[in-house]
Image (cartoon, rainbow, N blue to C red):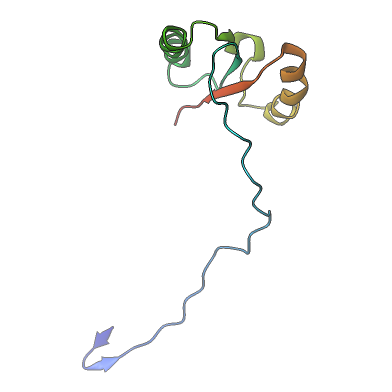
Length: 107
């Protein structure tokens, strides 16, 4: 920056810390949803009830054998007990035979 013909230099600090977690490979994608069970997860924001109804309708038209476990089964995935709810999902998924999940969230 120039001020009265004098160039000024400033030191800056990058506020981001070093990465705390290592990247993990993504789970392999399903080749099809035909015959699969899909969990619907929602944080109760931005009309997820309507969005999931539309997603379900469209996916059933494309994959007639797909089955859904409603967001009503899982409750709110955001809020005071969010950690417990999310931590319990793998166990619940196994119990319910879930192959995939759609997690809807509002902003």
